[in-house]
Length: 298
Image (tube, rainbow, N blue to C red; front, side):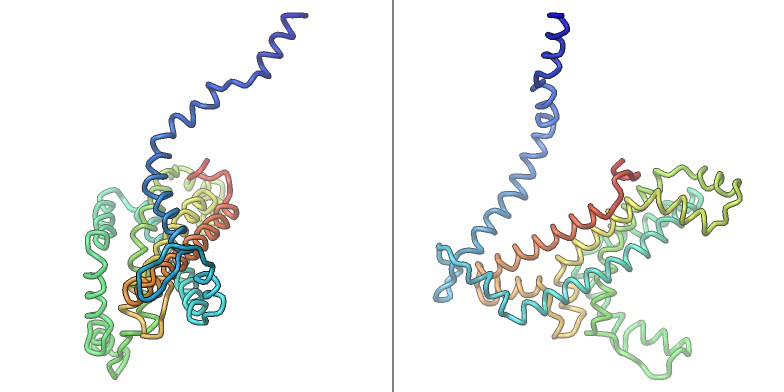
């Protein structure tokens, strides 16, 4: 009786070694995350409460004026809406294009795979400034797009899509597409192609196989690639500013203007904190909406 009681007591006794082992294994990654991500965000949060007096970068203090100004400034609310709208639409389109492209590469024979992957790598090997210069040659009235449309007979007069919201949207999609593609391709590579043959042997049409077999197996990758695309689209400000109209103000543009133009570091830090928290909320929503049991997260 006494031995049984001792066994029960031993089971109830917390095994601190077992509990601490995962934390000890994760400690290097945690230290790196705290040093390179946590501390800068903490400094940025502290900076957002400082004051901006007499054109000085900042004056140490504590004020909520930088956050209160966002509630009354229509420029900020318009920029926030523009940023979220552009990021959401471009992320959805990016995921659709990336999904189709990754599925085709996955289904193609291996001899085609390297060529497609090299093609997807090209945007990652070019700087964002070079990509912008490339679009500047493509969208103007005398650019490649106008020339191709007139030459093919689709239109009679040259058109210019430069400095339009459509050009900014295309630029954002182009920048985020490679990241989305490689995430989805890694998910497809984890799917056994024999499930498609098994579905066909059971009499399922290709469309039904896609909706009932392939899509559920890859929905974790869709959520991850959408999150990646959304983060990039929200944080990128050079492409929308260079390709879009002058009225297309994003949060990134406002942060750059406050930081470099007006030298108001506390206001820029406050904008950055709101943007960071907004992205965190969106990521939490995506995490909650995505299934817990997927190829990506098990």
